[in-house]
Length: 120
Image (tube, rainbow, N blue to C red; front, side):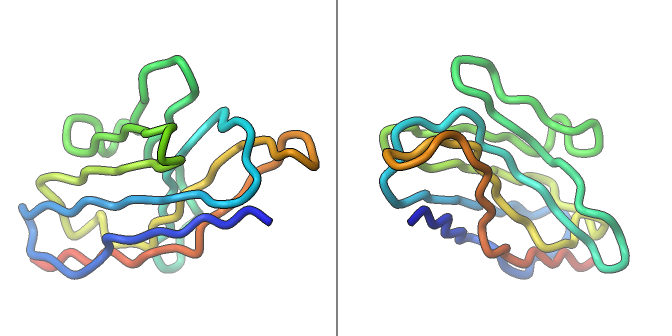
């Protein structure tokens, strides 16, 4: 069974930084895409950044130049470095992996979410 475990959330002041990580476990054969989403209260979940295998990561316009994502396939891990955080970045952050396992084809899995709170 595949599990995604996130870590690194917390409460910070505006202008500070946080780094999130998401690690996958299970009988995984290949990870096609790793992505980060966020959802603020009362809002829809939105894509923050994604990294498809063999391509450069891309980030949403709202975080471009402040958030940086990379992947470590050997560790089955995704990272999200968040710099110069703003109060509007406050949200629950979720990782999502699109991957294949020994027993099945490709499926999408979500982490449990980690809260990021930025105060002004």
